[in-house]
Length: 73
Image (cartoon, rainbow, N blue to C red; front, side, top):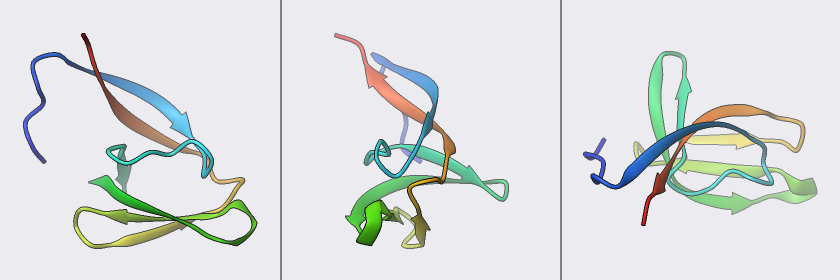
């Protein structure tokens, strides 16, 4: 992953299909993945495209712990 800007803060949060964002960092199976793009699916589900090219589909009841970078101003 890229280096963080000096003014970035990392925040650990829980996300769902409704709140996940591009740039969120998710750890799955001991590996770290950054969300590159999101695709809306039927019934509120989303498909996450990671920078590695891998896909993950999450449903409305899925909850994931992520690290979100927040830039200070």
